[in-house]
Length: 153
Image 1: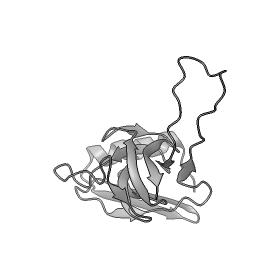
Image 2 (image 1 turned 60 degrees about the horizontal axis):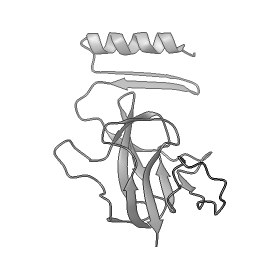
Image 3 (image 1 turned 45 degrees about the horizontal axis):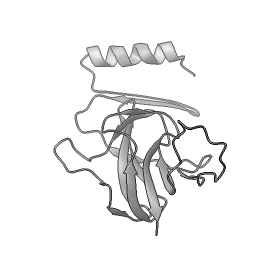
Image 4 (image 1 turned 120 degrees about the vertical axis):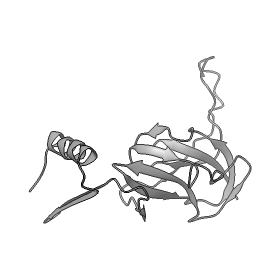
């Protein structure tokens, strides 16, 4: 069994407008879980194909740089492993996971990305100091979109 994108969208609409709270479909390798419960379970995913941290190259020392080009800030980026809405705090009334100047450890949760009502924790793969927050809370992020810049220890 495999559903088209329009069929999945129709299921989402039906779930949102109906009295059902959750829907799960499992058939071989195909799995789909939709839920409109108020407190979604936090899950952690690991992206094996692409690392979630990418090194930032140093600014070239060449005089051929365009005058309007912004120089790259040195450091390491923590990036989104998927498309979705990024949350920089665990709950709306809670403080942010990290602020500029905060220390981050390897494996520490720094954000949550929501995709189709599934919450995925984003963990740092680098230890260091947060030098820049590159997104706003509740921004929609693309795959590999930088979320934080970290100066490694």
